[in-house]
Amino acid sequence: MNKLRPIIILAVIMPVIAILAVYFFVFHKPSTTRDEMLVIYTFEKMIPLEVSTAFEKDTGIKIVYKYFQENEEMFDELVRTDGREHDLVIADDYIVEFVTHPAWDLAQKLDKGKIRNIGNIDPLFQHQFYDPRDEYTVPYGAGIQTIVYDPSKVQLDIRGYSDLWDDSLRNSVGITGNYRVINGMTLKILGKSYNTNDIADIRNAGERLKALVPNIRIIKDFGLEQDMIGGRISAAIMYTDQVTKSKRAKPDLKVVFPAEGIGFGIMPAFIPVGAPNADAAHRFLDYILDPVRGARCFEYSGYYCTFEASQNHISPESKEFLVLPGFGSFEMIQNISQEAEDEHSLVWAEFTRAVSN
Image (tube, rainbow, N blue to C red):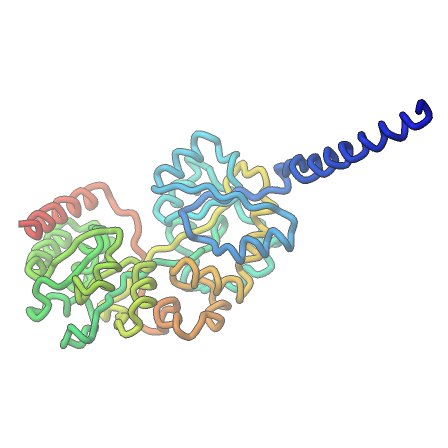
């Protein structure tokens, strides 16, 4: 019996050791080190899962997403952390002008030698006010002021902003709650710039805007596409992703690039100055600049394609609202003087009060 005891003990212990070994390797894998991780700080629903998963598989780098609601929230976070907690940020253009300004110095210049696909960017979206020499940013999608209408309910052939004043559209128009967009369209009707600092021009636009009041049914930033899909409005000025959602739900809707001129904004991607893994950020930028992967990104996010090489890879059913037409005038909405901003606010307050009454 004494001779059998070691065998019995081993018979009991070995399965336990095996179970412990499996538990250790399955549930106690070594944690990912910081140089194997890419932390992307942006809005929700910007990068498709298929692209993220493929990048992780191809590079061995794990992507961690962190989200913000407002651009100012992102800016405050970069200031608080000295740009040392995130590897890549995608935000709106106006805030990036501050991030890249020497007074703040929160972004680092791109090493374009690490971005082989950098030439795939559409030149239209380069050399903009927030990064005139394209030293810091890659444009990841654009938002365009777009008119959408339901031809089954609108007898008018809408071609520009001015058509929205037509009496036949009474109480049927929806607009975004962004005064620079809506006041701006009125400036364009008057032949002025979105970015004018001329107070008289802004006031004149405000007077013109008052005549639109009878036609306005809804003013709101979020969910406007549901009002179009549900038939509560028959024409609208929408954000780009709302246009995409509307068209996918109701393909018969018409998308119009206004004849008076197209205003747009860009979502630039940049690498914070103290990014722990700037190399991974450069690899990711190069990865999504691939023509096919870029197309998948824009189809997912619903924003206009800013990679020229990706335009022919956008699905045919999405091209109408994800690829800009090759005509018309384009003007980027930029930061303006505080005095001009204040006047816009006054004009907008008068207009919204009139609508609510």
